[in-house]
Structure formats: C-alpha cells, structure tokens
Length: 366
Ligand SMILES: [Ca+2]
Image 1: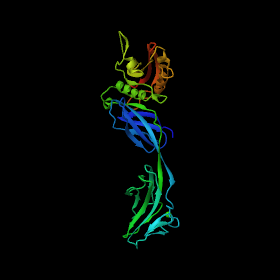
Image 2 (image 1 turned 90 degrees about the horizontal axis):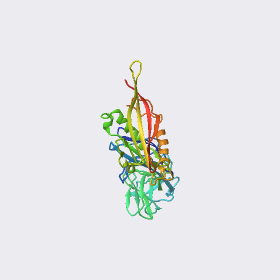
Image 3 (image 1 turned 45 degrees about the horizontal axis):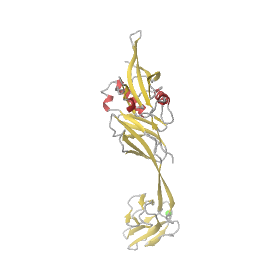
Image 4 (image 1 turned 135 degrees about the vertical axis):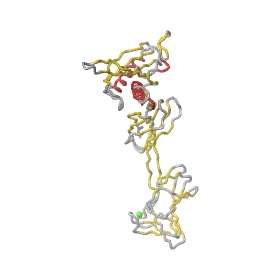
C-alpha cells in the first residue's frame, strides 16, 4: 500500500492541522525539531477530515509524519458458524439446533433441561498470529477461547493472539436461562503498514504573538509556518526557518554562520511605501522579505543552481515564490493578498549563495 501524503499543514492557536491523502487508519507521529525520538500524536480512522494535533509547545518547531494501517481478514476458520440447518462441525453437549431465532434463521440453542452445557469447535491456529472473533449478539452465552489458557471473551469483535497451534472456541451455558449463539466467526487479522509519509515541519506560533507582539512579528511567524512546511522531493526544503534575528553576520572574515544554518530561510516583515492621498488618507503597504541561502561543499556554484544532491537557491526561489504568491495570511491581518514584488542576490560566492524575495500587500488602515 502507498504511503499517506501530508498535503497541507497549518497552525492556529497552538494547534497544528494536517490534511492528508491515503487509505486506512492513520497515525501521526511528531517530534520537536532536532529531538531524535518520535511520539504518537494522533490516530484517525480515515484521512477524509483534517487531523488536529494539540498539546504542542508554542514557539517551537515540530516535525510530523504519517503512517497508515490496513487490516484485512483471512478466510473463515469456523465450520458452520451460521448454524444454517444443523450443528455440523460442532461438538455439542446439552446444546441443540433450533430455528426461528434472530435475523438469520438457525441457531445453536442451549437445551436448559440439562444442568449445564458446552458447544465447541477446534480451530487450527498459528502461535503469534492474531485472529478476529465475532458472533451475533446473543443473550446469556459466554464464549471462551481455550488454547494455552482459557480466555473469556467480553467484547466483540475480539482480537486474540494465538499461543498454540490449536484452540477451541466454546460457548458455555448454565442451567438458569435461555442461551443462543449464531454467526460465530474466527478469521486471521492481517495488518499492513504503509511506508511513512514525508516529514513536514511546522512552527507553532507562541501564544503571546496573538496579543503581545506587533503585527509584523505575527506576519513573520505566519510566514515561518509556511516556509517550514515547504518540501522538495519529500524532504524539507530548509534546515533553519526563523524570523530574521541577524543570525548571519557580515564581518571582517566574510559571511559568518552561513554554513551552520544553510539551507535556510529567514523572514522579515516591514511596512513600506506609505503615501498620503488627496484627503490625507494613509495608503500603506506591508513587505515580507524572505532570505534563502544554500551552501555547497566545494566551490562549484551548485549553491546557486543546485545539483543532484542539493537544491539550489534557484529552485528555492521558485518554491518560495509559489508559496506566497496571491496568499493571504488569514484572519486578524488587515491586508490584501501578498504578491511577489522583487528579487535580488545578497551573497554570491562559489560555495555560498543567498537571495532575497520580497512580497508586498496593501495594508488596510481604519
Ligand atoms: Ca444462523
């Protein structure tokens, strides 16, 4: 079976919402970026609805992937579990065949003239394999699996992992009342797991960003979330995605910290081009600048154009531009959609290359 695909990731109010395609029961695993161990975060019966993951620490980057599980059932191992016309296949003591009970005519019925009685059937099993046991809901009939030990089934369907090569499935009744069984089923439960999906990174905004930080800091946090989720060929596009905090310096020794962070994307939001119209109405724009950078191990220029093992700034530019072109940051931002407005290179060396992409949107002022 194919791996599920995480097609979209978003974050709001500390909750990450993942949209997936794929079949089966999906488990979402997460970890703090940089932490080795993965944790099961959510399980969903299907990928039809988006899956929400809460309990995340704000202000941190998380990674997510999905695995799907499908259960198929093997052949029916019970002979005459429907009790169509008789008790063929069963060994009965105090039980008789009867008609006229339940939606499927024909049942095994305890003949309560007896003190107590059992009806059972032996089934070949394989130790270590899991079987799914079901029956029609019938009153007053405890069913046991008798293998290496005797197990009373208390809920259906019941999943049983065999511990021997032969078990008996047995209904046992006391003399005090009516008891019936019907539609007894015993099938191997075969579980398939998909390969894992690609890993998606999401920056969970700090709660205080919603109230304490300014609009520009909130815009940067939004853009970080989008950039963190960008992938190319199933892998994260960037190693570091953060608001611009002057992580990379330009000192006497050249460009500092570049190798440590690349491939990176840094985001800066700022107000731009405020103009006054005739009525002194403020006409303002907001600019989002995304700085992307890549390194290459040898001075071959692949940081700029990429090669078989490395995504160059050229491809990063395509993906980042598509990610913000015509996109609105959502409720709470008084602006129009963002549009690409400018591009220029900022670092051009044989083993390092960086460029800035600028997007602008009209900012509403009331
Ligand atoms: Ca029946």
